[in-house]
Length: 526
Image 1 (cartoon, rainbow, N blue to C red):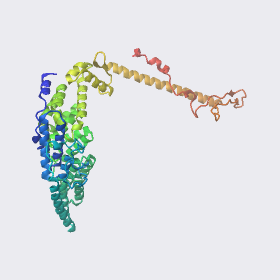
Image 2: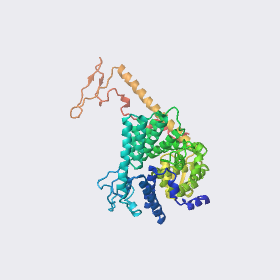
Image 3: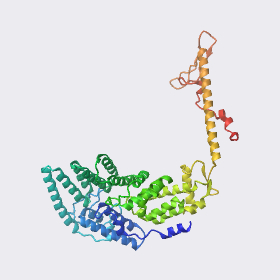
Image 4: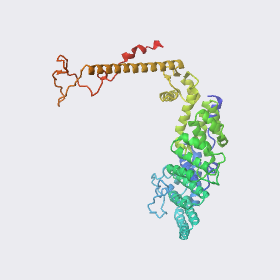
């Protein structure tokens, strides 16, 4: 590697700033809480000493502060293991069996999907928060339900819609996402203007994303695109939907569709949807997925030189990696991804599980483009360029040769440790030879078929037929007696082995011998 690659590798990722990272997202939002908890568990499981423990402690402190400020006592109890977490964050309690005041589990039971209630090692459990918060939440819920009942009794559509949305916001802050989703669905029936429809559609998509129900999110996006028409006050409405749609495609591993969605988002959309996704996320997702799935021309037109390039200012390291890729400096590009960006990608709640796959796709594409102008290349040299050992490079190249990514005729010479490809002249000769052989076999087959038809016609004209033997029940053939045909008593045809009905006797074997085309299979003929 050159000095640029070495400096990128030695520089590594900058120190992680938790406050700056979480400030990208809307305060008190569900995505902010989910990301804080994800970061806390991620850095706790990392081997790195006291720095990561500090990040974990700070993340848990910020998460607990948010849970207490919003009254989200259910998630609080889930983290401490006092109740069992359910998939939709609406916890299944045994008591409420414990009357929400029980002590957290100290047995180490694995209630949290990430680890075993590690928050207990950083922040002491507060036994008073849950019961007090429950009483306050019940009082507030009774008030909101009373407003809804009053509005329904007076049949006031706008008041009913407002009351339902207030209830949805109440449940959303407390982590009761499925109940919030149900309230928003009901409020859709009382929308009377385009602005109200937009508000409800965005809430439905946001809650579906927080619940990780991507099928429901895509259905809500499709419904919003077809139902919200006419005068739209929010000119960025469709761009917000595209950003959400990109998340759904990413979750379903539809990387190319996700890249197209993110790169088509207007640069004017910054933090308007930071309750789900931030401007930095759109920039990182779009550029990384574009690098992994788009060809060079499309990458330049949509990402590097298009309107999306304004967003690259938010992710300077990714912009640098794209610059190296556009200059065919593939080693430097991969080095920045591996040593500088990988840490930030692995701590992203949506992207972390896709990082190994995307990195492999980018590496394979870089190798394909690196080898494209050559007819032969040393695997050892390629390993030094791409930062891997000879065995690792040989394994990757064998995979690419096997799936045809390096083109027809690419071969690996294990003895010399080289990757080579046949010349165009040899490939053309092989193609012509295969075409000639296929044509000759087709001609031989046609000739045999015509001869069979002529022979059949001659037999029918001469009154000669071939009657197959009848099989006994046990399967043994019985000897048939001679059969007289026509007026000539001398014309006798003995029974032959049974033929398939209407089958051509010349084509009984159903195969063509290679001898029929032997004369054209000599490579010296070309």
